[in-house]
Picture 1 (tube, helix red, strand yellow):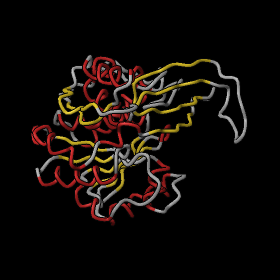
Picture 2 (cartoon, one colour):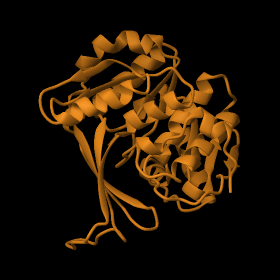
Picture 3 (cartoon, rainbow, N blue to C red):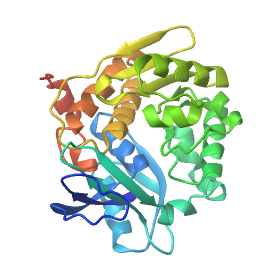
Length: 295
């Protein structure tokens, strides 16, 4: 759960360079919170597990989830600052992001005991890598022990995942750079994405969905590959597009949709999100997606 500090500039700055920005805004974000908001707006009943700080951002982050109808009984407040993300968005709608964990670092395995009822009540459990690694591993193991559908969005990824995690993951959903970091294969084409997905399946992941931006998504289940093209839209800001996809995919799975239907639903939601600025403000509703016609 991060407060996004967002500035727009004509381009991303080079090392040592100062640019004049165009606009600045503070927007509730964080991968977990974004995915929770996406799932809630797209029809799912959602609970969030996380930590916020005692600063003003902490109150704003919690309130942003509550207004979406998200269960925040497992969102705790810890002394100190909340998480923040410093984001620069350029004129081509690409972004560069620096994250400071803040209170997110206080979500420890020991603190999850009080959240077990929330895990037990869930059908689908989504994890990301913006909280401590040990906490993610604990949650994956507990989710598997409870027989839940487990989704891991391995972001941000700096290298391979612990080998023991893979057996607990039903759906591993990295983007191109994350798939590269996890598999050791440079993902820069559909063919290389297939090689990376095969490596991640071999490592033990149940199924893999590599999101490829404007090129769509690659689904791999260990038996075959399926490339699902992305809807065509005019992008304004790609922030939270991946989170919107993950939340939409999870919401569709929980609603009983097939994997292909859930992927296409997530793609439609993500496509709509990039036509709008910001993280959580860009995430569409179920009504938006149902009425979406690609350009």
